Image (cartoon, rainbow over all chains, first blue to last red; front, top):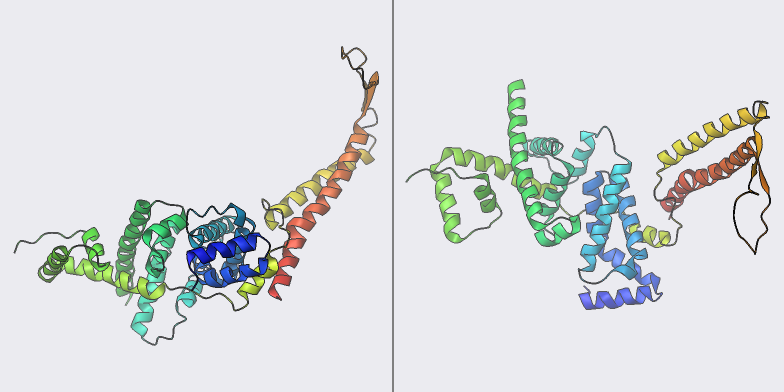
Length: 186
Length: 174
């Protein structure tokens, strides 16, 4: 685990020409960067591409990193913006619900009732706006504070709180509606 | 005990583990007394539970770092043009060039040439001697346009379509 000061000196050495050291930063931050990209573009292959692009952009802008925020927050903001512009450029008209279920169901779980509810939550997620969906998903990963997550997404903390709150209310309402419809079809 | 309607905000704060001990006790009591609040809590709790289960940090492919390092000095393609937009622009250029070639190959433009007389323009210039007139030929202008379009077309084809495809393909093999 490297400290912030060690990270800054690493960045100085990368800027000075020791580019191979950038791999250390990539290794440290790749998982969360990939997760952010995945939450936005909702496809693993595309998320890999987007996260890689984000890292490459960050490398080229490294001199502009002013060290007022943490490197991770600055990097994740670049990845998030890259993912958003990628999604705008390649907006899919039809999103396949099956894909998102497979995405969420990697963990072996044989409880049928739980699997059903998971499908219903995934279905309800589709009804949320992108901004609310991403906000609530990153909030629940609990890897970063609300303040840091807000900074990554380029929003203020109150907006993020409202989004998370609204998304959960909406999900609960949607879930109730879906379960009610399912019960009627039985 | 008087029943009060708990708001979603209060219930969500309770689920997040926020609030003072007294506030939390209050919500707990209310939930045991009020079936309506309990029902809403169950709905919100189901969402809370599944969001906790569904959202975790994901791992990219094992060669992720190698791919990033290999791509650090790959020249970027035209950032403002996606392959789709590049293809559309290329098609537009081809249509315009085709139209220009048709016009040039027909004899319709043979009359479209003239001389712009600039001898009368009051310009004092001691360094460069300007010609008294500049010829303008529409046919020649269109030929230049067609040539420029062909060059631009090749650049577009390379930067917005072919290069991104080959870069992606080579990155896949890293």
